[in-house]
Length: 142
Image (cartoon, rainbow, N blue to C red; front, side):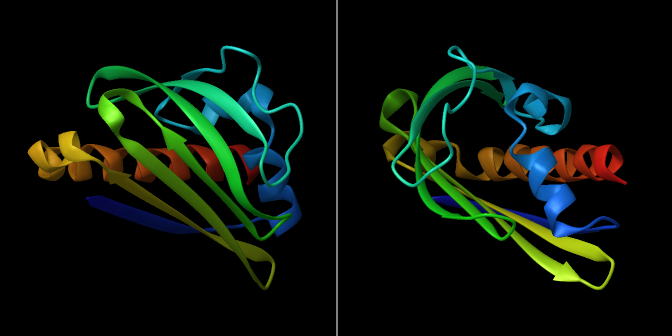
């Protein structure tokens, strides 16, 4: 298993950060691993909803079938997906209001036999992607 996390204090309300985070048409403007939604992103954002995403990590393309596991608007979005080579991917976005700003924490988890072979490199690549994504998201909502 490989786990990664990053967080940033974004000078915007949780509502504004949430709106950008869940604007699927603009997802690629800030998410560093996202390449496309083959079917346009999730039709409805609710627990149990599924959607497909094409992404790239460590230079390799991957298609992930995501399921929304936890949803608390303006607070938490947790998704779990199945990727290539029997790898399971989990992503959790946690928003915490902080005065006139919001702290956004992004956590990622990768499990599966293939992960153990490249855990160190995967952690480095995924951490860099999270940091870049937070930087871009902050720029969009600030």
